[in-house]
Structures are given as structure tokens and as C-alpha cells.
Image 1 (cartoon, rainbow, N blue to C red):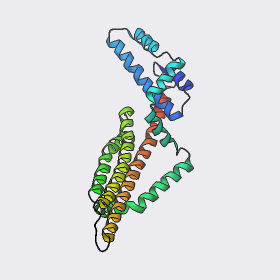
Image 2: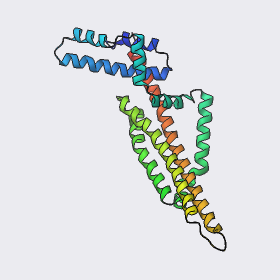
Image 3: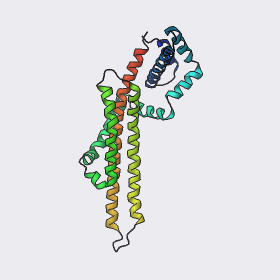
Image 4: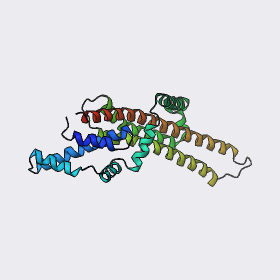
Length: 246
């Protein structure tokens, strides 16, 4: 049993937050308490006095709990939690996954075959490379979450959250690439007997290809994030429950 289990149980009971969020805060608290205890013992204090000083540092007043929640659940993390909590019921989760898989199936084969990235030009290849870069933290997190028995979930959470940043970067890059494609045609509008219609058709085709690649890459990255996030939340809850045992 953790030496600070009573403090952790009190915090878990008094925090008015969703269960996955409370589990993460409990784990962060446990790590902070253990670090503080180790710091005091390394400074020469006996274990009993070091434990008492660590307990005093984590006096759980209402203000301290509010500050604790603010530190461990900043605004950007609340947004991530809301995204990950949207599909908690089985029906919602199944519907979300089916929608994502349908979008991937409708455009993913063309992207994987590199047909559309070629049509999208340099922006398309950059999007493919950006998604490939996202696979690095995804693979590291996947190995930790699915294959290792002993794991540190704090750096793994940062890797999982980074996938959302890659997904957002795919969308923003696609939007900017589409704008550059259309703007380039407007800025250099050709005055010809055909009014530039053939060129405009090619520009629209390239812009559409950029949008398709951006959407497929963003959704693929978001889907990987969602699956890893679900696994991470279950492991965090299991570890928190173990710490809270009497």
C-alpha cells in the first residue's frame, strides 16, 4: 500500500471531476509526494519525519485542491479530455469509430497509393511526411501502453497528446496549402482567349487533392490518438485504483 494512500483517497473523493481526470491527478499527486519524500530523506531526515513534512506540504484545503486541479488540468488539457470523453458509451464510441473508418476508407486508399499526394504537389508530400513523423511518438506510446508491464505513464501521456498537435497541423497545413493554390491562380490570372478555364480546372483539382490528403492524414492521426488515449485512460484508472487501496 502507498504510504500516502489516505491523502490520495481524500483528494479522489473531494475532486469534482470526471473519473479519468481524477485518476490522472491522483497519479500526479502520488508521484509528487514520492518525489518530495525522497527529497527529504536524501536531505538526511528520517523516514517518519520526511513523510510528515510531505503530508504537510499537501494539506488538502479547498483552495489547495482547486489549485491542484488547475495545475494538473490546464485549459488545453480540459479540451483534450472533452474530446476523449465524447465517445465513452459503447454506442457513441462505435458510431465515432465507424464514421472515422468510413472517411478513411473513402479517401485513404488513394492517399496510401500516393496518387492523390502526387496530384496535390509539394503540399501533399509535406502532409504525408508530417503524418509519418506523427507515427514516431505513436509507436513509442503504443509499445509502452500495449507491450510493457512496467511503464511510466507521464511521458507517454505527452506523446499521446502530441498526436493531436500533429492532427491539427495537418488540417492547418491543408487549409493553407489550399489557399496558396487558389491564391496563386488568382494572382497570376492568365488572360487568354479561353479565360484561363483549363488552368483553373487544374488548380481546382490540385486544391481538392490537398484538402483530401489533409483530411485523411488528420483523421488517421486523430484515430490513432483516440485508440491510444482510451488505452492510456484505462491504465491510469487501474494504477490509481491500486494506489487507493486500503
